[in-house]
Length: 107
Length: 117
Image 1 (cartoon, rainbow over the protein chains, first blue to last red):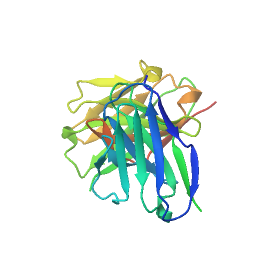
Image 2: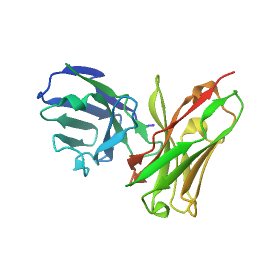
Image 3: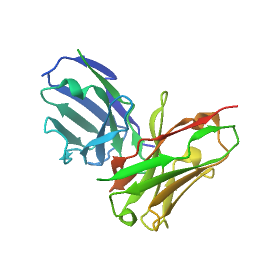
């Protein structure tokens, strides 16, 4: 199975900061990497697909980059509502796998 | 607006079985691959199974293969997951999701399955 390792596990940040979350795959997955946001008591929500493709309705401050084994989710000008857990997810090969999650706390 | 609503969760004894349902609306259901994903506090998100648009192709994660069965009824816009030979470690919130080339673009609210004696 492909293992996805996110860093950091936890980050405490202030509003308007720029946040970067990384996801490293145990083998090359091309651009088959997606990012999700999960707020407390809610189901995950797709933020970015195929490493860098934006999703309709998602604020433009969220962006993604990367290819192969190293990927980054960037949140520009963080807002209080961005407090959540963020997951990466690969769909290059079955079983699909997820990263362990990065919890973002807003100070 | 796409809506996915899971049901059927509850408390089950180890070795027991349960069938989860996912009712889809706001989309042309037969056009979508569908997935089940589960979430536990300790293990995070785990993809469980998926099924092709017509139901002819199914895939499972190794730990549930032979015990869980994914199926669908396109006439009623329903997705199912039959869980059998349940183990304590199957305790989780189970989500259904639409799949677009692998990306899970719509999720239900989840249904909790608790396996305990």
